[in-house]
Structures are given as C-alpha cells and as structure tokens.
Image (cartoon, rainbow, N blue to C red; front, side):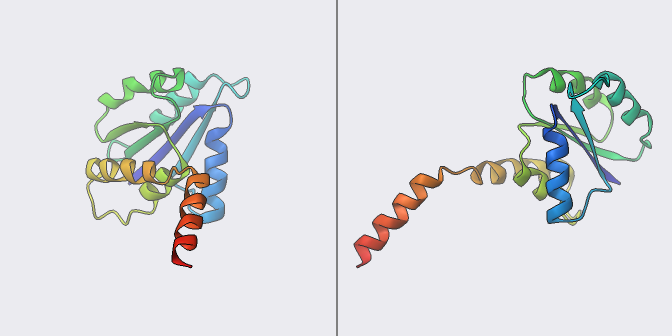
Length: 139
C-alpha cells in the first residue's frame, strides 16, 4: 500500500492534512510529523513511524525544505526499499500524489507531479493584469 508521511517544521504538516481532509476526506494513508512544534522528539516520531510499516508498504515522504533539519532526519530512510523523499511540499503536490489511481509507478508519478505542482504557483497580480489587458484589447 502506498502511504504518505508529511514532515515539516512547525504545524505545516497538520495544516496540509487538515486541508486534505476538507478537500478529499482522504487521510487514512497520511501521517504527519509537526517537528519542533511541541515537546515530542521528531527523531523518535520518525523511528516509530518506520517501525510500524510492513516491508511491502511504499512510502512517499514529503518535507518542507530541501536543506532543512527535518529533511536531513529523513534522508537515511531513502535506503529503505520503496521509500521516496520529496522536498518542497505544497498542497497541489500532495493532492496530485494522493489522488493518483495507482496506475503509474511511483517514481514516474513523483517526476510528473513536481513540475505540475510548480505550475500551480502563480503571481495572481500578473494574471489579473494580463486578463485586464486582454479584455481592454478585445473591447
């Protein structure tokens, strides 16, 4: 089964999980670690998570910052078979990964989802200006 671990600084991971619950209702396969948001040691939380996995479980780990401490704590787990680490998490990326019907292998899915999620990042002011200019040109 494909599972997801979202691990971030602060409560960003829980916020993403909450948004997933609202948008999809799908959170059964999603575990979050809000590192440094409370007294829990994230290293222990991570170890407990991986100890509870079955050998056949596939895991996509999503972190917030590529060079951040949370990402560094998780790098060692990429040696585990069927474990994928992706940094720069955003809601668009998580939705693309979670809503995949499972027809694509995970590496290909991740490689496709990352640029699609990047394309969802827009400076809306520019889009509004473009639309206004196009409307003015039309009329």
